[in-house]
Amino acid sequence: MDSDRKDSPESSALVIVDMQAEGCERHGPTLTPIIKNIRSLLDRFREANGNVIHVQSVRDKNHPEFTVFGKEYSLIENTPAVEFIEELKPLPNEIVVQKFSHDCFYQTTMEQQLRRLDLRPCRDRIIVTGIGSNNCVYHAVIGFHIRNYFVTVPEDCIHASRADGQQFALNQFRSSAYNFNINVNRSGDFRLQPSTRERALT
Image (cartoon, rainbow, N blue to C red):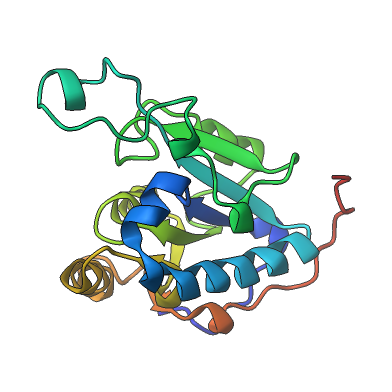
C-alpha cells in the first residue's frame, strides 16, 4: 500500500531469517535462486551502509521441543548445523540476533537492537527475508507488524519447504488483516536512498 515510498539506509533494516546450514539443506535446490536474490539485496544494503540484522535459530538439547514434545534434535547450538551459509555470512559489524523458537522477538535481543539502531515504530521500514515463509519468516513479519513498523516482504526472497506453505504466508500478508502495514513485492522493487552517514569499517 506504500510501494512509492523510498527509504533511507538509516530508516530501514534488512532482516535475514535463519539462512543456516541445516535449514537451507532441508529446503533443497529450489532455495538457490532465493539465496541469490537475498544476496543481491544484502549487497545493496551493504553498499549503502544500511542496517542488516541476521536472525539465527539455535537450541540446546534441553529445549522442551526435544525433552517434552519429542521432536528430533535440530539446530543444536555450537554445531555446524547452525552456521550461516557462506553466501550470507554476517560481516563483523552486522547484528546477529539468536532466537530459541520460531519467534525472533521472544526472549531475544531484537527489540534492544532496534532501539540501538533508532528504528522506530510508525516511522521506519523492515524488509524481511529468509526461511521458512510459513513459520520463522511468518512470525518475524507478524512480530514487526504488531509492533507497528512498515514491513516489506520481497516474495522472491522468502522460501517455504512446500508450495502450499509459501502460498499460505503470502495470502496472509496480502489479506486485509495485515496489508495496511505489510507490503508484498519483489526485491527489485525496493528503492534505497543514498546514505547520509559515514561507512562503517569492516
